[in-house]
Image 1 (cartoon, rainbow, N blue to C red):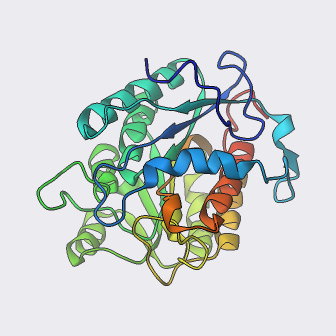
Image 2 (image 1 turned 180 degrees about the horizontal axis):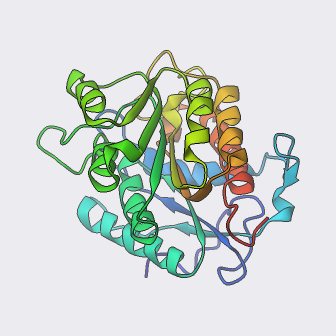
Length: 295
């Protein structure tokens, strides 16, 4: 059993449909076992749900409303605390079940390592998968202090699975020299600092492709998102990220799954990070799942 079937707490706004009737399944991945700086992102999904109550159902960005789609909030996965390998296995199994059931998976983390099993499940369903990765950090390490299961490794793992030429990273402004050397030598696509303009240049080449999107909230400058585990100065604005999500939503490609990770509420008493994340997720729900009967 992956979820507490008796859970009756807060759900994301209007994500009140049953699993059977909803093409979009939203779920939380409360894992922060491998973080290298500030823990606490395990509490991100629930705080995002609480923040969503302040949202309008209608998006002026897309001229659509959450009332127009059907979303099931499955709650947070019940993970074996401290056991990263088993937790990732459970996530991969659940995501695989969503694909077999014809659902669109949309997850909230949790640390960025939780994206790895979701990418694996998406690749099993779509072998030609492209990854769009929006983040402050390259996440291209092979290991962190001897540990290969680390929040600093998921994009390197994705390069090994998908092929580096099928991985596109945007907004990157932090990493080891070896990570940037790998990006340059491997043929992956890595854009520094900015998101919107390089994304605009790349999207025409992804026409007709199957794409998974992962967004780390720390791509935002800490002025906009202080509540995250590894904040990095010099980031983008909330507006630029909203515009980037809109570009992806409007592009002629098929987004097959997505996640937003690394909201750590304890470091943001004003809750601006959770409020922003809730809005980004609304835009992702409304704009990404083109290929399912949910529009």
